[in-house]
Image: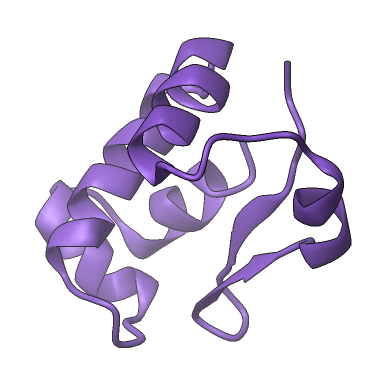
Length: 85
């Protein structure tokens, strides 16, 4: 099941979400349960999961795709392409 409720906006370098869509869901109050049951198990692209893991290590302040590309060992263009998966 794919909801498309949370996504990273590379143009503004921030996470964005569909608050109305999230409010309409019947989900666990435990964010870990939600992520495991509704995100990770529902087939996020392997590349998207890798970006999320590495980006989470960089913290919650905005960062450019060139910084993420260094961490990933690829080009900024590749990172921008991966974010559209």
